[in-house]
Image 1 (cartoon, helix red, strand yellow):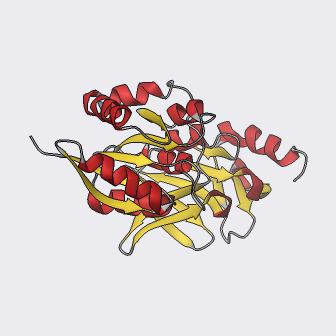
Image 2 (cartoon, helix red, strand yellow):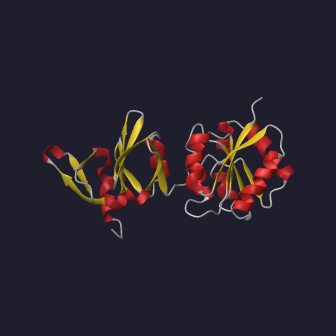
Length: 248
């Protein structure tokens, strides 16, 4: 039986070293890498393909909860076990589809129990631990590029456009492909993006004006975007309501 591949993510070197020592003491387990922050953890999950990620919550930049939200969108992502000095994040941790929650200092027996639980859980069971409700919204979208993973902050995104199985993200720096369903993005970012067409979600904060063309077709203009977008008849009212919101 192959060894369980484990990635350790913690911004403190002594904490990483302690976890490595504990894993080394366990049978059929091996550490395949160490990450100092969330972004590095995502990159190593992409390249090392661990079975389990031991993930600290409080880290600089992208914290552990945000990292877990990104990984929960992957079909082949690792099981996540949080390791933290704080007990106040348990609910958020399981909302992010964690399969374990260990308080520091992590004990060998607790770690072994969590790893056994992770090995028993199927992906669908892990998803159910999150409660089955609306997903927690990410602050950035992670896309795969030839140069590696790139994080696109949500506030820089103009709109998402679906085309068959892929979604194109139009943002301040250009365009990128994303392998996520538009309906999942609509649910996750329902407070920041609105649907204007069956295949288009736009940033509500970037809506500039709505125009009615000859023949009754409506077009939407976004701030800092050079082209108008088609608005289907069924979504015109929603766009008009967005234009009337306070603070625009």
